[in-house]
Length: 241
Image (cartoon, rainbow, N blue to C red; front, side, top):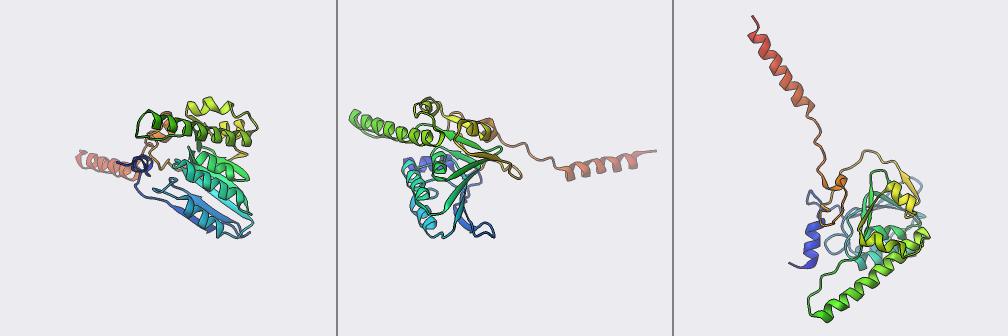
């Protein structure tokens, strides 16, 4: 099995369906909404697809809505660059999850807000290498360079030294909205309607919070409960002397 197939299976939406990239008019003011509600890469939303759709947008404001477990690091870099180079003001909204590569795609926006109950996750880049010691050493050097560039992105946003993010990335750190705000990774927290269940299987990560890994408690079936009580009442009525 190829590496991208492994990741695709790990990050697949729980219902097996892709949300894919969607672009739509958001408001009467002419702003445009872009939904990045999928994995990043050939098994989800590609950088080519993202840039093509983004370049076709002629608006003063773009609302980038994110719910993604991450994916291909280099595609994410290209997508972040496309956001930075677009003429529109970009406002990123993390509606559910901005994990791994998605956590620095959002940094391409001019403003970032995260919903109450949503999460951001930062960690070191991953790679699978086949070969001898020289091949693995070269991969380790490449990973170190990638991690350094990502730390620099987080540092630029927060104003903190890049080294402060080394341990956080080593530890695979999950941040709720308030923690991300306190760290300076985002600009504000917003209340969202509802509170949708996490759509992705994030068990591939080591420290995913229970809120994203444990199945939600099923809603009580009140109609069935009432019907059962009604049947029980009817039974007692028939049996009563």
